[in-house]
Length: 310
Image 1 (cartoon, rainbow, N blue to C red):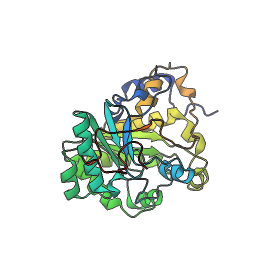
Image 2: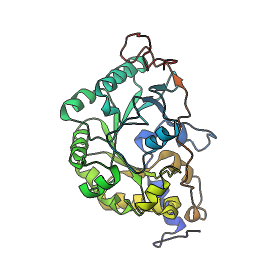
Image 3: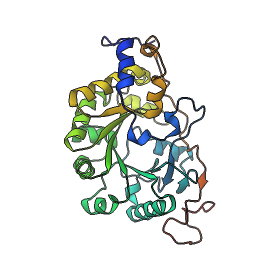
């Protein structure tokens, strides 16, 4: 079993998990309530499974290969607190459709918080001008702090476009989150530089995820250098994030569902906590439902935003 490293004590870990903030995106999510026995993520609008990247850790690709990729549509309850657009695929692949569903969600649910999740590389100043008034929060995926590492992880030469997106979001009134998948042996040593990039471009927060390893991407990740034992060792993740925040002065944290659970644990338990990083095939737990009217306000037969349509 992995044990305490780098002089980390139970008291230090306990202090760190109490000091790390709950990510703005995780506010209102069932997962942030450790007493909920079977939580689900925020409601989501899924647009497409397509993406302009081939990230080595991507769960959308795994879901596509396994046949569990969700159909386009709304997945949530009639009165959501927040809606993520989207959990699968790259929503900016279909910008006009994205704009339409954001307007429809606002019309249907009023002041619901709308969280856009994107890799950012298709975001232009003109498109952001149209999106900025429709979303409340924008999560931009960042896996590296320089062009070489970015290309290795994402399979695309799009680092300059990524930095432009961070600057567009960072200068706006929208709450900007840099979303990082932590991959020890591949990009963990980049975390301070990624956090500094977030600070420099004006982003508001960094949220770091434990890498989810599936049978379909395990060999690919290990071949790239992923340390499976280090992925599973939660105290290592906590301290990496806490140190990056301290070094840069940037607000940084981990997933709210994980952090809320860690806060319930004592200092004797935390140093030995190992969380299985091997995951089942990804699938949405929520059911597809009708979102207000149709995505664009019309009632066209076969619209994929209407429940029950193919």
